[in-house]
Length: 124
Image (cartoon, rainbow, N blue to C red; front, top):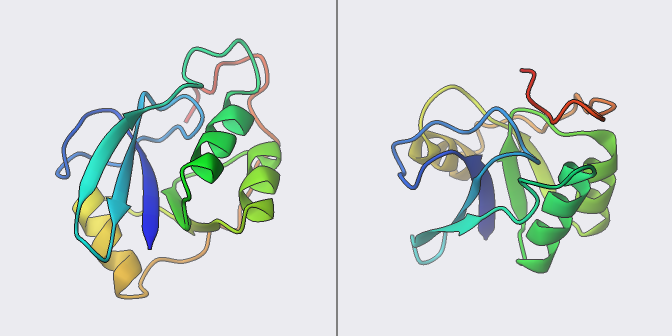
């Protein structure tokens, strides 16, 4: 399973970034091999539609799951159409969240917001 998590720094001990579309990086964890790599988010500087662009980036990256604190409805539509499961991030590190998903302790992300259009996604 390939899991993506939005992050601000290249460390498995880092916390999950509160923003999805505007996160500077995505951690891409392969649960079978245990490998994790960090990819720059091509949508971080987008003038608009950052969530949709980030969602398409994950779909193109063969993601199976996304762990995030929040997601806009347009991005969620792209992700679900690609078959990517959305899980609600919990406080703690990337490692904590990946282990929680593997242990079936993460809830599905069910609170999809309408987006932060024209606000750069900066509010938490």
